[in-house]
Image (cartoon, rainbow, N blue to C red):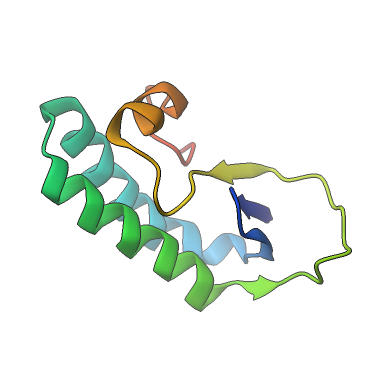
Length: 92
């Protein structure tokens, strides 16, 4: 799956990693819903860090369709709230 981190670029990520990422996504959803700004910031950084760690960066000139778009590292709680679905940022 191709994942875009807004403002950074794209990474190719194996589907096998999504169970681990969904745990962080669930935490992020809870923190956004409760308005926990400090927890939100820490979990967003952990989620994006894990995507970078597990994913393989695509070249800057690659323009693959992104199947998943994640917020920029400096996104506000409100910006992320607007991106969320009932499942969080990561479906499933």
